[in-house]
Image 1 (tube, helix red, strand yellow):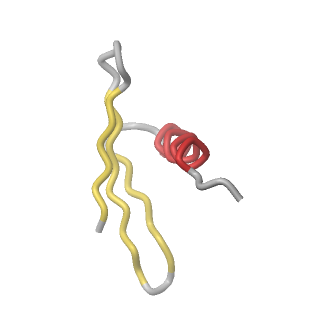
Image 2 (cartoon, rainbow, N blue to C red; image 1 turned 180 degrees about the vertical axis):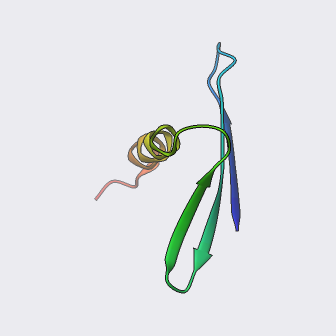
Length: 53
């Protein structure tokens, strides 16, 4: 399991989720926030920190 916690700088908004890595695939379990909000943060982070080709 991966636990994900994030806070927006200059804001009180908090995001959290647990990500379970199962043999059938990954399962995202957000903590009191919409799943799409967590997915958007993860997508933005992946784009920001992706290694150049």
